[in-house]
Image 1 (cartoon, one colour):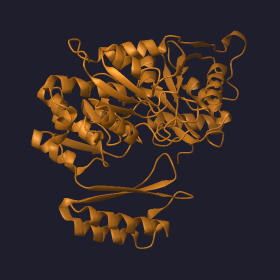
Image 2 (cartoon, rainbow, N blue to C red; image 1 turned 180 degrees about the vertical axis):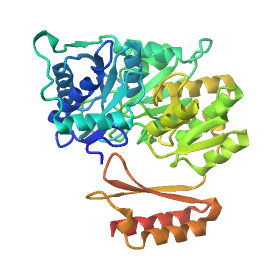
Image 3 (cartoon, rainbow, N blue to C red; image 1 turned 120 degrees about the horizontal axis):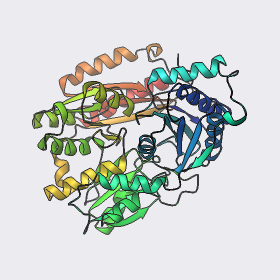
Image 4 (cartoon, rainbow, N blue to C red; image 1 turned 180 degrees about the horizontal axis):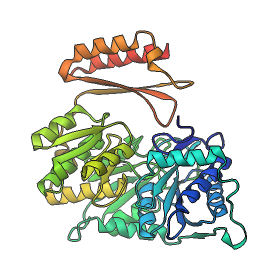
Length: 446
């Protein structure tokens, strides 16, 4: 039974259990204890997004790591994929990101990368929990000159900017492009504008003034309408909306139509296939991706492999089966050729390169996939719900599935990051699936 870690690290309301400074310090000590077994380095990278609570958690993590005799490299506000890059670039033993990603500012989280830049496996997270709750570290604290020290990587942003620009084809520029860029008042605000501007684009920036409390607030990948409206208003070529920690991207075409992760994946998968770079002709996505993506892959002569929800599970399957590209409908896109985790800026650059090469606007590229009508509704609960105990729930789902047949599907799952039950239904008739979703939500609320 996991006590701290969920599908994407530890997450909760900041300054309440488990997102307290006490637990953060213990997590820092646990990570340090694990890396002390390694023969080299003993350095851990720490980065964060722009939440007010990041200051206290950053200091607590650093204190815990140093108290176990391991050095800390502080990056300040930097996107999650930037921390993965810096971790491998600096040959550090691990990287830690303080962020609750797309959640509101009062939440925060801690997620951990191994020295290879991939998220820490479940078993290693379980080891950290065991170290914390068993008190095994209590008698192992170093003293005197054996404690660790902390230093700041002053040019962390610059290093990451150079890395991102190097993923864009050397013979292409963004000259003549007008981009509306929404940084969600999050970790990308000091990176993304420089990347696109230095490649030649005219950039209209929104949500680039973080105050510690406005991260993801009515902006960014979760609220892309602001960006889409600005594209339409200004006649821009593309809108790019990133989330608070920069590992997601949602775009808007030149007409202001929002294009989600499924359509972006279809466009990128087709390009990779044309260059024989989509390994095993397979795209990896989660159970949340639209059935239309499956049909699009079949028309290309490829296939779609599905995982449970969470970009870490997409990456795990990609590594196990040696696939090269995958992602989520929510905008996580993982190009393993370039980085080890979802990277919103990097994904936007790959999309722009395809637009240049194909000489087509985003609206035309996005027609490669036709989405089935999909309804997604959330039921917020006071505590974790056991769906097996909801009267009539499974019988109702079975009846609905029979009605939908092969032209629809139902997915009901518990969120791994907040007390929410997510109900997703796809089918050919929007009114029908909307009524079905309302009926299931009402059963859960009851």
